[in-house]
Length: 167
Image 1: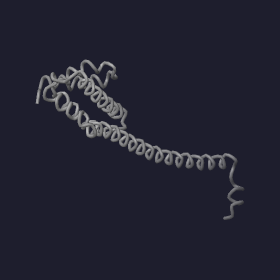
Image 2 (image 1 turned 90 degrees about the vertical axis):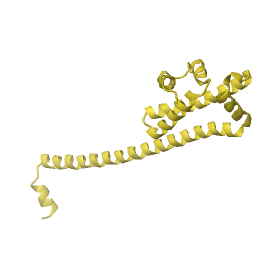
Image 3 (image 1 turned 90 degrees about the horizontal axis):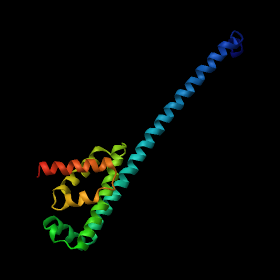
Image 4 (image 1 turned 180 degrees about the vertical axis):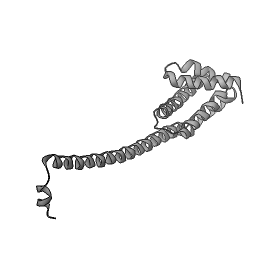
């Protein structure tokens, strides 16, 4: 049947219904396209966040690797923190602050859903190791006041837990 015969028997309301149906199909297609774009964008953001976290942790590690004196200070702090000179303590404090700012970033990214549980678990494990070192708790209590409350609370809980259950 030719199109003009089909259209002759249709009312304006029928044509409007067809238009609405076609429009609805267009909306559904648009929503599907947007869903795919959002999913791809989320993957890209997570990937960029992972890369940023890796870069931060590599900077911390490279500081420790490239500076033999800093490695000695860390060793001394772990074995005999009371023997650190004021300058050594200051350098160690700067390194710990740099490290814990990186950890704080990972914590925030984890809370916001951009870092995954494995990344946070690795950081939490590292914080637990730090918390067992002589002198760390003293440094943490003196140096953590400027950090965001949620992150500070989590680290405080880890430190308190190592007090109750030392390894």
